[in-house]
Each structure stands twice: as structure tokens, then as C-alpha cells.
Length: 130
Image (spheres, rainbow, N blue to C red):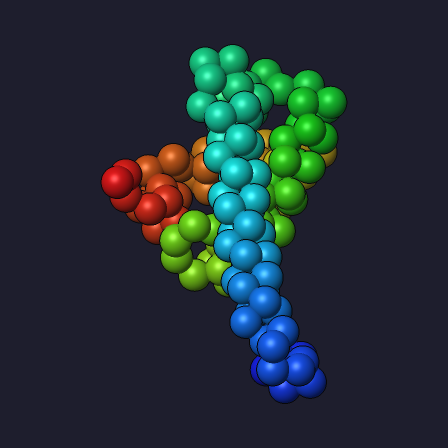
């Protein structure tokens, strides 16, 4: 599609259009990375994080709803590393586990703990520190 757009742009503007497209792609990647980082910092990492409450069986329905929305948001973001289809699958599995927890299904907490393993996810989707 990009090639089709560029084909119809007059020569003097081609470099400008290409530059703007590259900038848009770069910004969208950075924005997705920020969404994921912020979600992790707020909902998974702190000692009082909602994800930790879920693992202990202490999360309220409002907290579960909040975490479900958070995981759905990061699901829509492209992971900084790794296969996007695997990322989406992992996020959907996490949402399903959270919905089980909210429905008071006893298997939900253990499923959530398994799918929310930090190291397993980071090994696949988080780039190495520079």
C-alpha cells in the first residue's frame, strides 16, 4: 500500500512523504513500547501491583476489570521483540485467566500465575538492555 501511495506522489515530494512515513512508523513503535512499559510498571512490578493481588486471590472485581483492560491494551501493541502472533496469544490467554478469576473459577489463579511469569515473557518479548 505504501508503494502505491508513493507511486502517485510527484517527484519533489517523494522524499518528504517517505520521511514522514518512516517517522510515523518509528513513533508508532515507540508508542507501543511505552504502553507496554507503563502497563508493566503500574500493574505488574510494584509490591502492591494488581497482578500480584490476583496471584494471591486478593484482587477486587474493579481491579480485575482494570487489569483486563490493561492486558487488552498491551495486546494491541506490538511487542518490542519476538513474534507478534505469540504476543497476542499470550495476552489473550492472560485475559481468559483473569476472566476465570473474576467468575470465581478456581483454576483462574493458577492459570494466571502460569501465563504471567515475568521471566518467561521477558525472555521472548523484552529486548536486552543496551
